Length: 115
Image 1 (spheres, rainbow, N blue to C red):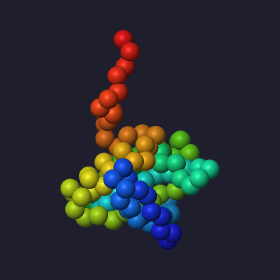
Image 2 (image 1 turned 180 degrees about the horizontal axis):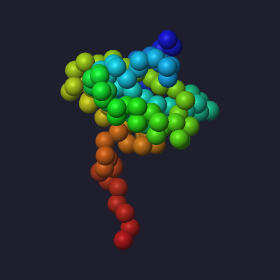
Image 3 (image 1 turned 120 degrees about the horizontal axis):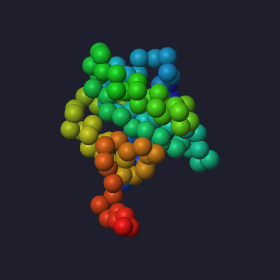
Image 4 (image 1 turned 180 degrees about the vertical axis):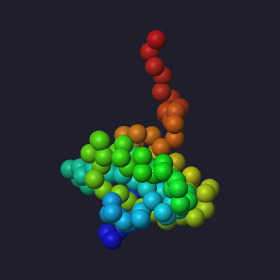
């Protein structure tokens, strides 16, 4: 397993392990990033929180959705604590600007749309 570090808005590094599609990556409690190769590393397409529950299908749907946009790599960070997972996800989302936001309705506070 290849180890890759991603940096959130806070500047804190979070270590992820690259997992293969055929592995049991979705059985982990933690955070998963789906990424596409980019000129300078990885472009994050989608991020998802994983509960580690046996029949949680949300990570699989997120992975299939990200594949449609070129994501070929899965990175997993194990974190059993729910609050810490959410904090990591929010920090990484703010710092990495994924194609699809992790939290529904997530928009920058200072975004104003013209009428």
